[in-house]
Length: 273
Image 1 (cartoon, rainbow, N blue to C red):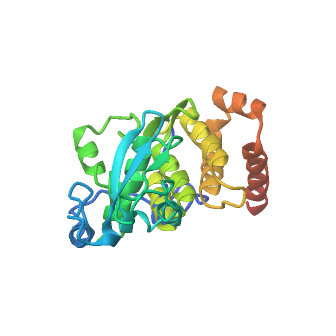
Image 2 (cartoon, rainbow, N blue to C red):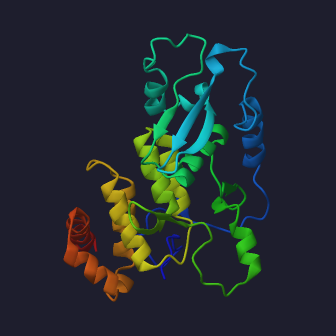
């Protein structure tokens, strides 16, 4: 089992000290700021009365099961991807200008991941929310304190850290899937948020990390420099564990760009020693 948390002293090649997690002594005032921001926006459960034409509600069907979502147009159009879809010409010549906007169909998206994206658009974060302990200048997830008080010997993967993705045929880190969705929808702040939250999880099995890394490579462009580098650094940092992993051996035999990049990163790491 591996931890994506950053060690404080034993791993000088860890990603960044700003990702280290610590126990939160009290709820950060950021929560109240987020609450005030939420009051200034519309809640997805309480659509407007339709009196304003630029605050129409968009219907979205997500995934192969056509799960229904609804979102306000002005919120959804923060994403350039959705702005283009919302402003496309109507398919029906008989549709009046006052009719509801065209529904959006995303058959390849996963409902659980889109729910995270939608929650971010409304609230500036998604569950479990990120907390900042300003006293100790550490970051934590809102579920971490509860998990730590449950048992000090629990070595299971963090609850909610992974999600089964049919496209990968396996469980991957949920924040990786959110990052890739944010890449698709051109939400740069959500990408940074997902990457930071991923660094706070612990006890992640080797096979989950490798499957997540392959998913990241398959759903990001070749010039993507954050998420891919995150996985390369993690594997190098935990190379003692990965070299004993049967999954690592099988993955390397399959090959792919991931492992060429890993070879280059490992060479650079050796030069810097």
